[in-house]
Amino acid sequence: MKNLAVVFLLALLSVVSGVDQAQGQSNAREAFETGNEAYQAENYEQALENYLTAASSAHSFELYFNLGNTYFKLDSLGKCILYYERAREIRPQNEDIVVNLQIARQQLIDKIEPLPSLGVNSFWERITAESNLATYSWLSIAGLFLSAAIYLLMLLYRHRASLRSPLRVIFTILMVFSIGSLFLAYQTNSRLESEKSAVIMVSATNVVLSPESSAKKVFELHEGTKVEITEKSGEWLKVKLANGSTGWLKAETLEII
Image (tube, rainbow, N blue to C red; front, side, top):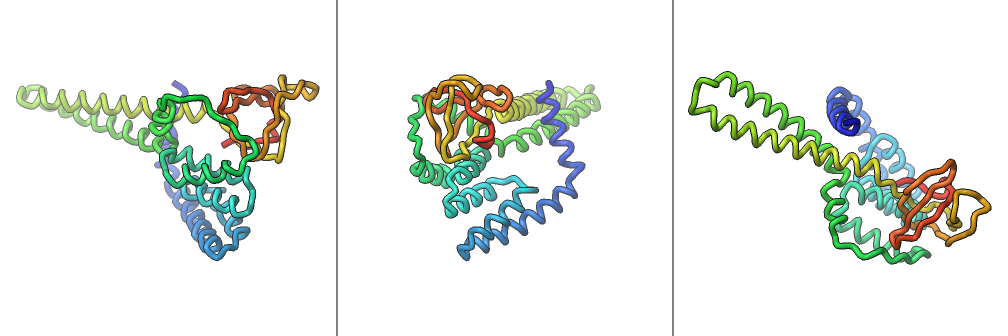
């Protein structure tokens, strides 16, 4: 129920704070457009500065995608893949981000073959993409308000047999629609909270058997490699690779997507 409350609270707070958000979005848009101009002029350092300014108050696929492109131009592979992955979280089905990620990954030192997949995870990832959360939340709220309106009409016209049946059908459809949207909002929020992935930010780091400096080295990872965080112990994180390999490394060596 905690996650459910968060979904509704975020939707309602977005209405209350609309003016402040609009101002912040306006400033971010200006910085973003200035960054685009610098990028087109091949002034990548200036573009990066403007994009990061925009990212301090904005959150969008286009911004993260452009940040990834800029870091790629600046030969910062870890940051490049980090922002490409953040963009992919928002629009996992976008063809441009899929292609750019493939190009960036070709430069990785670590060549990790993922375990076979039936495609179910990929489908669920698209359904519960971050960009869908606000839509599901608003649809569930709109459906509940419309359901309440239809219910009032049902009470108002309860003595008119010709209207009772159609109104009940409409009410039922709206309630099912609202519950379905709410379920998807809940599942999307839960997935985003539970699935924590990260990208290695240092040139190389040792992955060890246990969360201690004296532990035996299992393997080595390099900048740009994506890992899934499964456990935390102090300054140590247990990570899992796409091929199923696991181990511990220092939290300071990676950045959360």
